[in-house]
Structure formats: structure tokens, C-alpha cells
Amino acid sequence: MSTDEDTANDGEMEKINVRVPQPLLAQVDDTWERRGYASKSEFIRDALRDAVNPPTKLSDEALEHLAKSRAQRSQEETVPQDDVKDRFDIDD
Image (cartoon, rainbow, N blue to C red; front, side, top):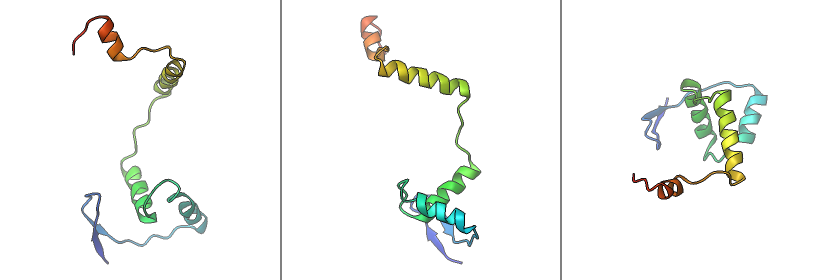
């Protein structure tokens, strides 16, 4: 067993062996570099972190509000907060 110091400050790392089906490994090989990871190991560590601490999932309602907001912004139907503050003479 070997240990290395993780550059992401996760502490000492321990090397493990994992068996994965060939089709899954082929998908990992096709994906890690395309997504901007420095190595396959970094990609797998990130996937393990997500499995242990899943990212927050927004509700369908929140996603709908975000989509509407983005559409309004792209159609220039919104006003920047600073402009509103200036218009109504509001200080921070």
C-alpha cells in the first residue's frame, strides 16, 4: 500500500484496487480528459466525493424559475440591481 499527499488538501491518500467492468472503464477513459480532469484518478476521486456528498439538486420549481429568469435576461426584460438602486436612491 502506498500513500501520497493530495494537492487538494484532502490529507494523505491511500492507493486502492477496484475492479470495474470493461465497458464502464471505457466510458471513464472517454470522459475524464474531455471534462478537464488532470488524470483518471482525479476524475474517480471527484466521482467518489459526489457519491459520499451528493451535490444539491434544485427542485423542478426552482429550475423553472431559473429558466424564466434566464429568458428574461436574454430578452433584456430585466434591470440590473445597481440601476434600480440608483433610480430609487438606495444606499447599500
